[in-house]
Length: 536
Image (cartoon, rainbow, N blue to C red; front, top):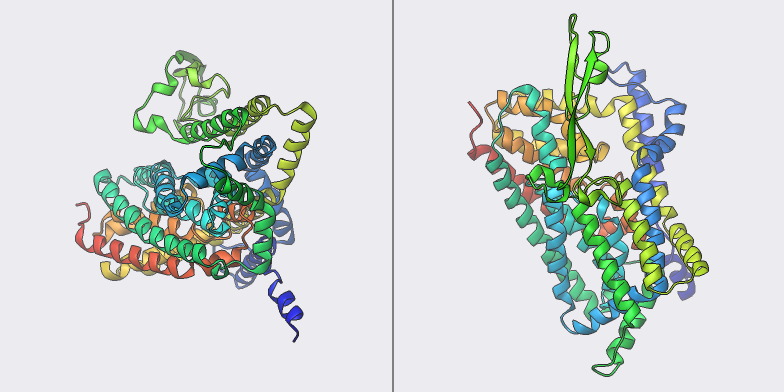
């Protein structure tokens, strides 16, 4: 084989993220068909229509985050058009000359705080592009940038302390079972899992980054990925090189670029603040000035269920003949921070974030002096760059849709719970952790997993005399670990696509780390299950 042929062979791409997800979708459909044909109770065989419509239903289910990613692409296109982003990265790299490694632990810790407090996951997608460009300019490679975001936020989610989408949803799902949980125990275990796994991950990423910094040939990226990295992030790297070569004191950014970069940073800060559920922490600052009034509704037994609902939006059923007046509070004037999006900071989701980024794209375009024609072209091109990410997120969601339609996820959960009944703590804890790892590939959503599993696993642990608090953290850690590597997570697949990294490369990069984190979590959780008594 000639050298040219060898090089061509090395440049061959591994199968794409789209193909991986389609293979998983079809394989799971075949499994359900076989189980259905065998008469397995609780599982319906997937039909051709189920498989064909799953990606479309996945897109519909993921529409808010898909639209957010598209508008984010347009926003980044405008920032790039001003030249502020590349110039800002270059200025940062010049300032940190020789100390670039310090960025890794600082940024990973910041992302982890977001993970442990409010489950920062799909909200991290914008940062993959930014951090990949920054790390490439700093002399590392794009996978370092992706690892900073994914492992940082992921370790925080794994060790959730007050994350309402993980431990909060788990505690709430146990309320109907009458089980009382100890929030202090949950927070203590969460902090231990969070900080231990984060420390291991920081050391892992820094060792790799240091190696790549010293020898570019030691990168784990394929030749094709290296070429894609240079094409996507090479401009930022060249700006950094020019900045380093420029005389000390020479300005590397214009006034417009500095102002654009300041607004760029403010945009992300406000987005993060908007996603944090401040009401769960009894913080009302962002909703100050809101006005509510009592609304009375005359109802009868036939229509009372249709108008009365609980705080979660679920209808409350009544039996017998009931009639009278239902009084409820209705917000008629939201707080001051709802001026632009209609909802105050702390109640945002992707629709509000999309609105915010669209507004800020226009403002940055004006500050940066971008003409109308350039603005439209840059915004459309930015959206176009995100289209592959959007389709990956939608396709990843289709697998969850198919599992819900066939009942395979609940079948696995119910049968595994029965198998765990009667085991000792030293066996029960690691097997429960393993169960959550398996289930989380099918249901990557932490709130979704908590809702379907904790009403089964919580009472099971309690009936065996084990701590329900530890069971909640077993769920959190198992689900969090899988969300570092599962292809069914739109955040992972979309983020890696932005960083120009193949999924197989990510697994190759973090494979050993994932095993280490899994073993460490299993040891901590098993020890906790043995030492912490269950409720009486």
